[in-house]
Image (spheres, rainbow, N blue to C red):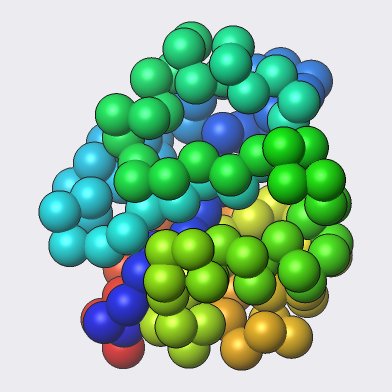
Length: 130
């Protein structure tokens, strides 16, 4: 994979907001080689950004509420692709919701279902080497 990295690595956002302490260090190692983006449905964007310092860990943060679209809407993903700009085929989306991955997959993005941290890192490493 030579392109960009998309990921949602705030775990359990909305219920028990916390940074996934296993994924965060891994993503720090990717930042110099890939465009890292957080796409969040959270409407607590200011708190999330301050609390976790996400703006220092990723290149761009998109909050669906600010875009007026939900993560199920392909126009949200297309806006991000256009603004960065990124090729969908060179993009990996990591999400814990299958329904969000279906939207990204329909736009020709590579998708990975987050089940647990070790699995996500292993699958990301494999996808990025492809």
